Image (tube, rainbow, N blue to C red):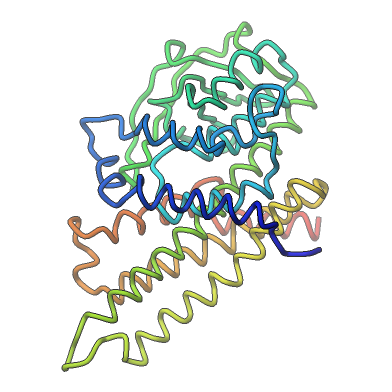
Length: 339
């Protein structure tokens, strides 16, 4: 297996990075925490759609780019680096391919073109998840119950807000009636599609955790260059160097594992679940270590709500727990390897 991205994939990543550096600043992320708003930015979502990011996994026949997880993983990493407060994993990484695969042509025709143009957001609630992220802005909710999948509008559900450690990642308990008229997939074929969808969600969270971890390390390196104690920058102290070096090493070991999972999802699906679980465990551990090192090196100011550090740190905490935490995925690796 060759761990190398094409020049086009890297150019796409750089283009998305430039857009997010300009349009998804710390102020934008902070505003997404405002409880008086829905915390989402239609202009930013529209610009991501114009670039093709939102519709990257939408088939070309429905107006998307029809690309794979390999093409998407770098863009999701950049989304994490910016702490993008939009349902990019739920809508684009999971929802769009799920709609394309469930075999309901009318549902796909109705929604996939709207996703590709940025005129619709999706969210998903798969088995094992007590709460649904971004249900308040979703035009369509794809909810699993048992081995069945239901497609619901916001008028079909009652949303009960739940506490989230990350104020920009809104969580809801969804109360709804599993009416047969809303069921869009069932049986063994549906269960296979839903299992792939869960792996796509875990992969998307893993990629975002890589970006979050890198940002936490980068801003901490800049901070320790200027923060002084005893007349010297604290970055010159060996203990601080060790904290950051350990976090960087763990992150760099996690990155190729996440990329391999993207490759497996796209090219070798029989190994995908194993590799996705390895990726989620490694990426979660790496991002949590980066968050801990960042907080330790920033000291008391790192605890401050007014400081931007907590915006990225709490997103790392939230995504490390989402789509199965590291312990859950390590257990699944054991089951898949050892039976």
